[in-house]
Length: 83
Image 1 (cartoon, rainbow, N blue to C red):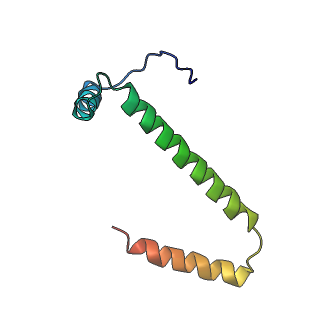
Image 2 (cartoon, rainbow, N blue to C red):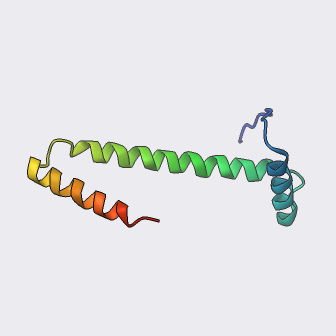
């Protein structure tokens, strides 16, 4: 059995309108399901970011000074072409 709780959040009127519209298109009476899905997706994304960060930190100190400098230059070059 899933336990749910009611809570109050503040949001912009345009966000509320968009959520109600999306929920209506899906056949839902309210937008609680849409918000729950968005929270789940956000939290899953955050945990993925945290896992990636931890994996990246495992290699900290494993590059030589020369490799580090080459990587910095390459990242700078790639970023200069980002839009």
